[in-house]
View 1 (cartoon, helix red, strand yellow):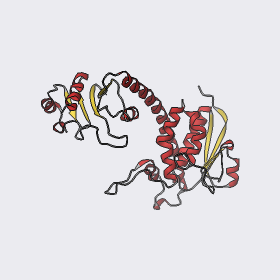
View 2: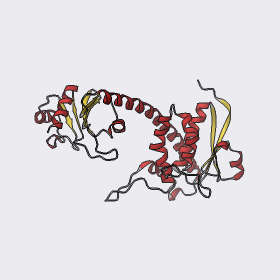
View 3: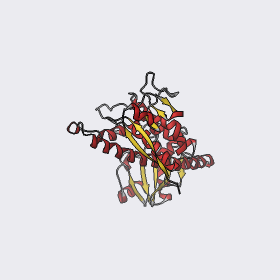
View 4: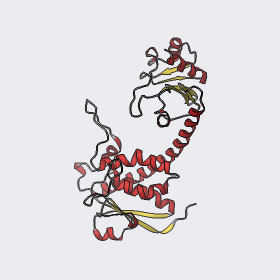
Length: 306
């Protein structure tokens, strides 16, 4: 059991509009302090005296000094950038110091940094990490969630609503970050299992992974192994065939399931495939389901030689 220390630690960030980087920075510190047994309070202020007395200062104050727990990037020249050119925002600065302390290993720390921290830092520094579609659709993403809780024009000047929204988001993102850290650990374990299965398989064109496995885990291991065409894995009480993607960031399949299967299910799919326990094939032809492992393998073999 974590002992709860009596003295509250203070975290100061700026008032006014909030953003994903300051919210996640506060959430990271909240996780760390809870793990250390400290209570804490978050103060939203730009007052220099309040900032000077704080135990932790994020995204305000004009100073980046981890030894003093000061994590701002708004000073002239910013607070540096990564080797890949992504500048640091408050989240990244806090994560660099405290992220490894709330993760159970460096691989998990690096995974969260790559998938969550760097994209948020990039956008906070005005760097686009995705392009709109031809019809103008944009990714909603984390900043869309944060934006939904900003005051509307009808709520302008309502600091109580703004503070309530900020606190809600810190609490939500704390839970989200804790969940992502847990999932990263579980995913790392699965990645190692997939790698072992691949290394020990005589034939890898159709690779059987007898677990409930995420697409991201498969991509992490098998993206560089272009000979892998289909994966057979568990799907709740059934088994499924997954088409491997051509590239990690693409939805294009290395080989799609047969066009004649698309959208069919039950007896209709069983008739066209000759697999009696066939359940369903997705319209996009990247996935098909059968009741048994043998049925899924038969579907994969049929698709491979179609």
